[in-house]
Amino acid sequence: MKKPAHLLLFTFLLTALFSCQPKKSEETAQDPEDHMEWWREARFGMFIHWGLYAIPAGEWNGTTNHAEWIRTTAKIPLEEYDQFLDEFNPVKFDADAWVKMAKDAGMKYIVITSKHHDGFGLFDSETSDYDVMATPFKRDILKELSEACKKAGIKLCFYHSIMDWHHPDYLPRREWEQNRSVEGAEFPRYVDYMKAQLKELITNYGELGVLWFDGEWEDTWTHADGVELYDYVRSLQPNIIINNRVDKGRQGMAGLTKEGDFVGDFGTPEQEIPAIGLPGVDWESCMTMNDHWGYNSHDDNWKSSEDLIRKLVDIASKGGNFLLNIGPKADGTFPQESIERLADIGDWMDVYSESVYGTQASPIAEVEWGRITQKKTENSTRIYLHVFDWPESGQLELEGLKGRLTKAGMLTNDFDKFRVDVDEKNQRYVVNLPDVAPNTIDEVLWLDFRE
Ligand code: H79
Image (spheres, rainbow, N blue to C red):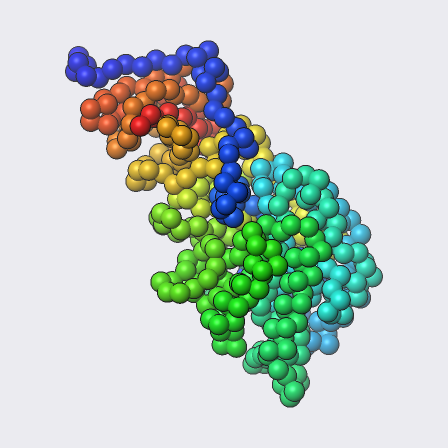
């Protein structure tokens, strides 16, 4: 069929593409005024859930569905749980090796449990005897990680639970705990203890990226407490980022912050990806690779590497960050399945990371063949087309992209050309693809538009 006169034909040769490689995201200018800037640029981080609960590895009296919640889900009396202190000796722990695995996967920050709900600290705290110094290991894990992160240029961040099943002043007790008296317990004293721990964490481990609170939902924790704690933490490190679980504003597991006067710098969807992003709202989906956060030796329901890579891209296409969890074993190593998935993600990121770092949500509605991210420079916008399902027609049809198309390319160099048919007047573009996808998980093409 004859093409209408306004339908121009653009052919882009690979040689031309090399001369217009995009600026690497690390080089893009950062606004020092905005404390969220590095976090938005990063898009991808590692969550680490590690503590005494790695020792039972999810199993208690024949039941195997536990993890970091084991003291509560298996109803373990405190004195019995505390015996894990004598067993915690992760002799294979190597902070540099952990940080390298995160970095090689393309992650820019690590959020590790300084203290989970069980109350056990992975660091040397003056305020408590319930920490790593009371174990045979006697090494400040967070100190070693902070040094490894500093060397590698990774931002270190702490997950710190507000709920605490160990401290005598924390209230309420679990409803099944018959023997732990509440007599003399004073919640404000617990809050002082938590603040003293946070001061140690913010003072002794170099500049932190994020404080990631959790366990804020019990009635003893109030909106006023949240606002106070937010201000306190920011007073200790003004540019620190704090999640919305410091306050009472999160909407269930969907995690975005309710309308109202709530503090917190970003929303925290847990084990889910919001159907659509929210323009102007920062959020981060945290997710496990299998079905548990802490190590569970029985859980083999691992997500595939393909699934994880596409989740990262899906989240970026909606304007969020991805915080992907590892539950290390009691010996200090990552589960082999996690190591393999991190390596696969890293292989993909080696080629395609610029379509993730520093990108924003897609400017157009979801497309059936994949996802779209975009990156804005001064007067142009680069649109990244993430092709999950290589179309049988060989064509991607795009509508509603604004501006004038000036350049196009592919992030692999396996193919020497593709073609974009442009109907600029109607803002309609047809990308004619090579026959075979260079990468079947997610091949990425880009289109540059000038205003
Ligand atoms: O650390 C991991 C889990 O141990 C922790 N968050 C991740 C990052 C976690 N704690 N609790 N849960 C997960 C599930 C708790 C869900 C509920 Fe609620 C708490 C249901 C009711 C109270 C919070 C408030 C979520 C919905 C309403």
